[in-house]
Length: 432
Image 1: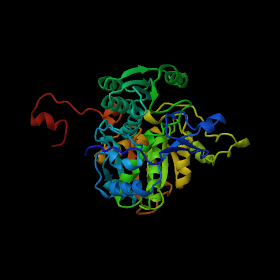
Image 2: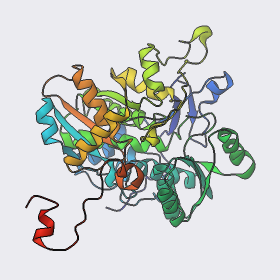
Image 3: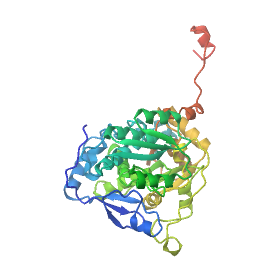
Image 4: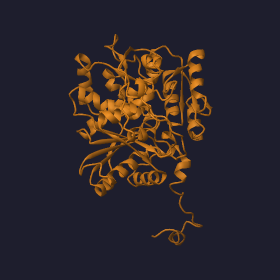
């Protein structure tokens, strides 16, 4: 399907702060809410367009049509882009894990984002963020990444004809860095220390446009996060109902918030019930969202002592095979999604991640280790009685395991070798 543009002028595009509710006009606001910033808070911004009139009718028409590989089908509620960059992202499968469902007594599905064009959910974000950057007149874009996002931004920047710089974390896969280079991006590996100041100077002094976190992190690009809403739209359409719970691997929290907002859009448009419970799944190596939920924190401005910033904890980052979600900070928008949906957060250890990755592989899906956190979280919560019998539960698998060969080597060997291609030699290695 060919991407479709939105006619100009566009209806009532704006940004609203998740924390204080202040409205801002559409524009290059990549550093969070100006009102919160002036008050010393981190205020994530949420893209808004009223779901009414022609916008609502086009949205409903898109939802009635068969799910396809093109998130711009939902252009009526996405930021307007005259020539949307697209590689056929979206329309990913919703697959029932039959054996796991039978053993747990729930209907357990996987929303398999690993089959997007660059093999991860980040394509949805990158398509919208890069498209808006070009709309705003950008000629060069940059982001920080452990792998998936850098590859997606590099690919979509290539489609859009923009220069691209990726600041990679030291833990980023060498394979991923090479793929980014193939797309034409400049790739530089830097330590995390000092990166916020570097990113700020890239914007202020050299005119680079950020397409993900600004300063301070983790304030996600408000336009890119809209791309994640399409996951919620697709789950509802593919399942034919609102699931009980959706479990999401969570680092900074953009995906968690975006999926919740997708279901909130459907509810606001009268096309679905209240959003499902959103569950943020983190590694024990860094689980700030779990800490915030356990501490009973909420997201209304002024909840903190003295009316200051909400005290979402910052934690030390440990070591985990789930590299993509090991983040010491989480955005307040992620906590907002959990609180408003009645959900929770869960931290899983390396053993649980390995068991979940192997269980997914035995049902045909080989995830990256961070992706396995959603199933690991589901198994952990099921053991604690979190799901009612027969409930529809969706685990988002965010990326493909083949992008992380070192992690795969820890899950399985490469088979046996026999000295001769004969039945006798083969029988000594495997049962015939």
